[in-house]
Length: 219
Picture (cartoon, rainbow, N blue to C red):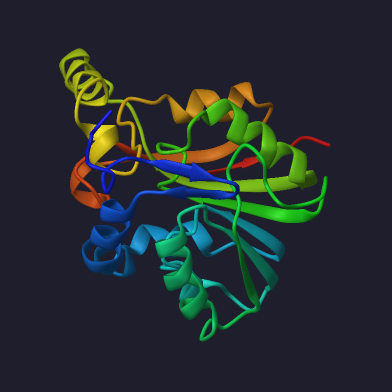
């Protein structure tokens, strides 16, 4: 673990603090995310009450359509959450930003119609626990919309990703893990994938393999 307290992830209650990463994300990555048209594809078919997991600075908020009645946006990092609260004030739909962690969401069982995960399942402490929580709060027949970077298909690419995960990458980039099998984790959690696309490197927000798609929670 890094000795510098600014680089160390600190967990207190509903907060997980990554101060340096949060400031860098807000200044650099959020601007890139605003231009990413994959996020428009991700959010184009939502309706009803929506949970957004790990909303970051709220870069998705401006893209929600009027078919969405309310968004509950959960973000554990306080600096990012402050940015999200400001973004929520000018969003086209009602958005409530809440503190919370992926393995203990501040929502009741079967209380949302849709869930959104965009570039967040790579960074939660345990993807299986996070997806179990998403399943808990979704109503039967509810849908999970996902846009995530994932493990490479080729052996060399996966080896490089795993080497980065074992060394500097998670500590530097807010607990991000490059080599997760997110599609497999979604299916293990009991979701049925309705469709997904594996994006080319040049078509995604970061130069890593990504998947974009939708899964449904069976009735």
